[in-house]
Length: 511
Image (cartoon, rainbow, N blue to C red; front, side, top):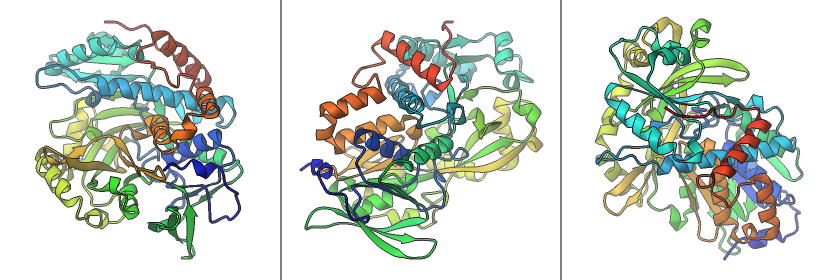
């Protein structure tokens, strides 16, 4: 059974939208815009628990905002036990980010999004290592630069050059310490909160789109008679309850997606659990220090640390103002959302996922120990971690701020019983009538590719029609082709998106 019949119906009652999106974050915004571009007559309703758009993971202060393109994130190129480096994930993420940029450029050209500077700005991406990790970085550089996606990457271990690029990191550093970096001028900083709000502002100008803030989903059930989804909601501002009915339901509620997915009772959701990881930033308060640094500089994660805890000194442009963040420091909370409840984790436990979750816990003792150590950190401990990056850092220049809450995926595993997954995953029903997005990084940066995968699963027949194929090509000119394999196409694509989004092009790379 497919949901192609969704597109051949009479639009009448307001309580019977064609599409319901739960959560007003970057994923729902992206899916809503894609669907309205592909089928303008669709009737879409969006429901958000908070009274603001992008108040959780999509918010600039809750999100790493790096434009995760695998240029600098060393956790995307893990080193195997035999010393080889796996670049598969980095290549996939780099290509996905180019897909996102094409979609945003299309929307800017169509005047659906206004000034791109409000959400995306050129910011060099750098990886930094010292001493024993230098051989790894050089090997990684050699492998990645074989792909056109990493054209323009430079490697440098010359201290005089490094003092020009990253003076704040080099000042006061032990002269005996060897330091090496890779640098990509093509890197970006993205305010996903601003982008999400801009996408929703555009959506709300379109016919048959309604956004409802301060509405919490309390119950989801599939009706046996017609297989439609019935969603029960409460208006948090006046406590009124209502029920809506839809043929397609998307759960894009960040950390809150897992409990809602469990409500659907689809067999595909069996065995999924969630492991919440919280985060904190040190935010620089000294303008003089902020102005000494203009890059995103990522190091290597400590042994046992989750990938979201890769330390980085991060230049951000938030609402037109330059900011400097260091972190994130990991923590543990049983909440699934920053504005969630401490009962979220225990309430997510079910008969089908308790064994995978216990098994994953047993296989991730180093992670548990790491999180406990992080929670116990004092201000001086956090300063010591910062001083590895900024030797001259002073505690009085930095303020501790709460970052977002992430829920990592736990799923059944044949060998281990349960496995902790880092990344994002779509869980959808066999008939394509409901889909949920679970997981975290690199989520927002690859949102367009993720939502295209969702369309392939849930709107299979429409995706094959000449009409949709033509529209997809207009939105994403490289659609159906490989930027990783076609150097000319990759360069042409980047030239266009950089011009439209007012970004710098990469310089020529090399050692």
